[in-house]
Structure formats: C-alpha cells, structure tokens
Length: 252
Length: 372
Picture 1 (spheres, one colour):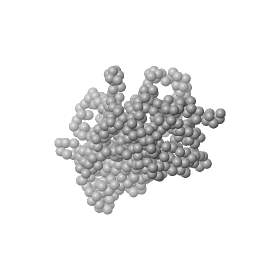
Picture 2 (picture 1 turned 180 degrees about the vertical axis):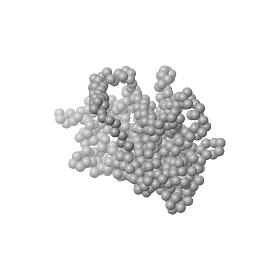
Picture 3 (picture 1 turned 90 degrees about the vertical axis):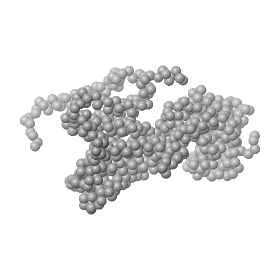
Picture 4 (picture 1 turned 30 degrees about the vertical axis):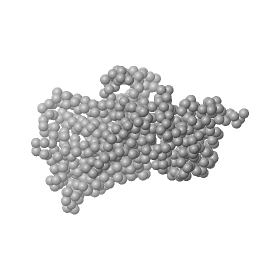
C-alpha cells in the first residue's frame, strides 16, 4: 500500500431527521488506485459520496485531503479542491454539441471589440485534445448534438469535463456502466484504467461485481449505513463480497 | 460505420435540417400558389415591400421569443407590453412634450422593466410562465386602458414614423433594417455568448444546467427582459407605422410571434433553437397573411390560418421527434384499435347530438328576428 491515503474520511455520520443514513464510516482512497464502493440499495453509498463531493455536509466526522482537514460547504468547494463527480445521468445538455457540454458553466472566451464572446473554435480544439490525450477517445463528429452520441461516448464527454480541471485529484463515478451494453461497458472500464494510470484516485460506485473486480484495487462494502469491510480485489472473490453485502457471514 | 452512413435514407439525412427546410418549403408553396393564382398583384414590388414591412414588426419579438421558448418558457404578455409602452411613449411626447429621441429609449426600457417583472414573478414566486404572463397580459392591457381610455393618440414626430415606415430610397424600408439587425444580433447572442449557450442548456436539461453551476433563474429573467424590450420596440415600430396608438393595439402579437417561432423549428419542449428558422417563420406568416389579403379573403380568416399553421407545424415536429414509427401502420390505423373505435363512437355521438339539435331548432324555427 502506498504511503498516506489521498482521501481520508473518518467517523462520518449523516442523519436526515431521525433516519441515520451513515454511521461512523471510514473511507480511504489512494492516488493511482480505483476504490469501488458496493452495497445494497439504501446501504449509504450515494450518501457517502455526496458527503465526499460536498453536496451533503456530514453530521459528524472529518474529511482529510492529502492529510489536511477540509470542510466543504458546497459542491463547488469540492471541485475547487480537486474532487469532482460524474453522475449516473451524466448531467449533459443533449442539444448542445460535445464541446459546449464539456465547457458548460466554464466556457472559454475571447474579446471581440472589448465584448466578451464565447470562443467556440478554441473550445472545439481543446475538447478534441482532452478527449484524445486524456481518454484516448476520438469522436466521429464534434458538430453533432450530444444526444446523437452513444452511451459510452457521452460518458467520455462527461468524464472529459471533470478531468479538464487541471487540479482534479479525485474522481467519483456513480454507476458509470449501469445503462451501457457490454461493448460500451468495456470501453468505460478502459477509461477508468486510463484515469487511474494518470494518478487520479478513482472512486467507483457500482452494482455490477464483474465490473468492480475487473477494474478496482480495493472494494469498500457498505451495509445498512456502515462499512462492513474493505477487501483487496486481488485476494477476494465475488462470493465473499456478496456475502458481505447481504450480511450472510454475520448471520452464519 | 461508413456503410451505415451510406445506407441512411434520404429522409434520415435531411432530418437535422428540417427546422430550416420546413418553413422554406411552405414559403415556396405559397410563392408557387400565388404565382398561379394572382402573380400580377402578389409579385409587385410595392406588395413585396408591404410583406417585408409587416414581417419587420415581428422580427424583434420572434428573436426574443426564440430565447424564451428555448428555455421551456412562454410569454403571452407581449401584445400588452407593446401597447402599454407605446401608449406611455405617446403620452410623454404628446402631453409632456418629451423629445422623441428620449421617449423611444424610455419606451424600450419600460418594456424591459415589464419583462423583468414577468421574469421575477416566474422565478421568485414560482408562478408557471403560462399563468404568470397570461395574468400580466391582463394587468398591462388594463393599465393601457386606464391611461388612454378610448383615446387614439396620433400624429407623431418624423423620427418615429421613420422607424415605423420609413424607406431608404431604392432600397428596403427602415423597419426591415431594424428587424433584420435584431435577428442578426439574436443569432450572435444565441451562438457566441454565455446567455445563448446557457439558454440552450437550461432548455435542454435544467438539472444538468443547475449542477454545472449555471444560474438558471437569472438567465430566465434575462430572457424575459429581452422579450419585454423587444416587445416595446415592436410597440414603437407599430406606433410609427400607423402614426397612431391606442390601448387595444397589437391584440394578435402573442400567438403570431409564438407561431412564427414554432413554425421555424424552435421546440416548445426546450433546448432546440433556430434563429434562422424564426426569421423564416416570420416571413412565412407575413407572406401567408398577405396572400389572403391579395386573394381578397376576409381579414378575419388570418386568425384561422395562423391557428391552423401552429397546430399543423407543432404536430409535424412532434411526429418527427418520435423516432419509433414502426407499427404505426399509416394515418388511419389508429382508428382500428379498440381504443380508437371507442373514440370514434364518442365523436360520432357528439356530432350526432349536435346535428339533432340543429334539426330540432330548424324544425321549430319561427320568423327571423334581426338584432340590429
């Protein structure tokens, strides 16, 4: 295991009114590693990453980024410190072209006669570059609206948007393969490996244990709001992880 | 992949351009029809000038409405905004002796303010845009009536009539230049600015827009402000064109402008904008109305024609949106399904009752009793 974790979440508890979604959860994620979070519905996976990405604030507990304690009051704070997420819905505007989507909310501009205008040309070339250099993806056409792309290509655009931020250190992916066919899934998993090789800490939420075992280094299992174990993917198997998810070992 | 591209049918490859092709085909159809029916009167230079002059009035509003509709909004108050800002401007000039060069910008700023009120009502009070602008339509129209009563304010300085109907000798009318300039400005706004980019994003996927940090509400307000300013500009142009204004002016602006934008391929469901389409839509409606006049069809039919054009073009675009057309089995296959049969019987019963009532009325009818 490489030295100190990039992300340390310690004793995270999150309550919504009387409901305890997370209780005393620890999570470690290392740079250059894929950490998978698995668990049944309602096990607290989504809440956990929403706490990490600043969407929710923890009721109790602390988050350390590269050893320093951080407090996120909003998602924007987390993005600034290099933690971003790719949502299951991808959050793409389907009528815009890929370049417009990649820079949505963060457009490149130039001055024309003192007036700020969008620099569509530069956004296009940048999109092409980022997709090629960081993700190894080439789109057939950058002019077509994003809705005409395949599921995997849309995913690539959404990931490109996250990785374009130079300071990105942690990328959270929520169910990236849920809506994809086998071929697109394979491509997306390859993208995840590419990102890992570039030294990012990738946190992957998935229901598909096959995908999890293919790409992840460690697997964090959530059950009923608690972390019931972290296993090394190479030393474990689907049976063991499934057992942890449903709590079979505990019952036995 | 390449073979798949080549195998695409012609209609599939044309589909992205339907927004432009649709109104263009209809324009061509009108031109062809008029070339057969009334070529001498329709294609006179003075008549073409008239068409452009009529279209120019709607161009600024169609430009702004393209933004509003692309954001999944609608503005039903533009006719009243045009009338109210026109009336106030007229009062300032006629009664308070304001210079026309100040009164015109004041009118446009007033329109922008009314748009701001619309926008704030929709975004701050969460009133649905349909209800909000419909209610504000009543409010603005009411204020116009309160101010002007039944008065017709007429005879304005030359600057105003130049805006409304001036002509550059040997060239096109001044309002047409204003109209086309606003359309071009709208195109640049749509493709090259934050406002245009976010307008499409908001209409396409409001949640995603919010997630990427776009201030959705602020950009909605901007669209309504633009809409108000453009409606006021149209009010100014209308005042100049007629050299008169009254509280009941501009009654058909709302639907006419919405029709032009929708016919031009901007989607009522948001996200799909076409500035060129809106331009073509405005031209199309003006040509159609002019054709009706040229054919000596009564003026009141133009409202019927506009309505039919809106319904048919929205139906057409919705059908084009629907990708899965297998199993539809032609136009009338729907009538053969059990549900279609029920609907058919229901409609038949309704019409049957109507016919029966008419028959009873005719049977027992007395002598005509003229009301006037």
